[in-house]
Image (cartoon, rainbow, N blue to C red; front, side):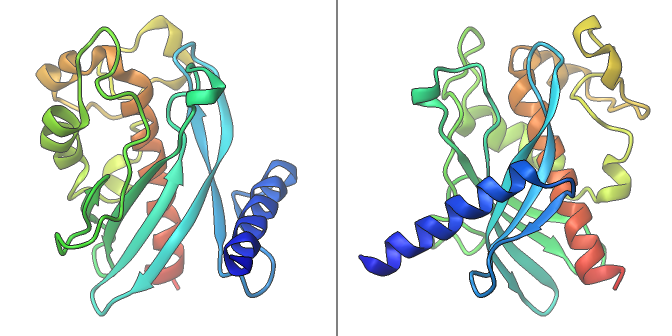
Length: 209
């Protein structure tokens, strides 16, 4: 119990440090091993701000790195329901591409490494993690690297006025899927932004070293 309380205290301290930091990466207290990144969170009203994205688990394999990351996508819910999502991600050490993304089991299919903390289904759209994100949107992200996602800030080809300041400079060319997720912009936009932030961290640590 003492160890658990200590770990929680270190985690909360690291999160509080991020709020005061001007950098995008914050090291937790020496010995904790926790790294906290910041990603540019975009809400449904077109407001952007940096939010914490702790790396809960990071393990280097021969050809890829295993990650567990936590983040909050939707901030429009009641604070009592503002749960964190936990994503399990594999990234290649040679190509820097996303190999596997999951909010449930890891790539071995054996361990429960992720948690979908967003609405499920998403209100008014009926979009669910199991029948939509897991089947369509996440497979679209898998296989892409930092260069592929460079210039993609939101999951739109035609930019709505609310996101005028964040227009893509690269076309996505997925009109049917974009239409299907039109009412889930906070989830899609921020998943893209979270993965771009993690890819940048991975690139700097394992590829451009």
